[in-house]
Image (tube, rainbow, N blue to C red; front, side, top):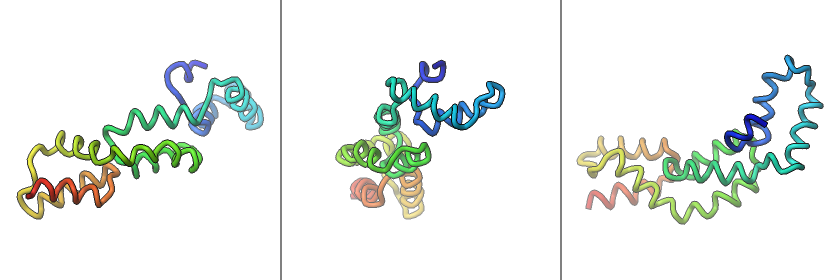
Length: 140
């Protein structure tokens, strides 16, 4: 309960966190699964709430692809990811421009600078077509 009071967790994330202490608490794998399923049924643990909270926290810094990859690593189902990340696509250009402006402020002046800025945005998980729109619009 202490962990859940601080922030939302995915089922897999909480299970991994609690499994660190399972030996000292003399919990076996089945008891841990039963405990997590009781948290889910009582409404204390929800992958959907976790997904919403995670996207809300990350959308201003990262692109859709990085958010999707991180959610998959946290054990969130693909259908749930698609449901919550879908609406993000409409705002992604705006978020990408904000991330770009915060880091670089000036348009690229050379091919090397263009490549550097493109790599930065791509490492943040933004789509290549969005990157081209942002950097080519600034060149004109």
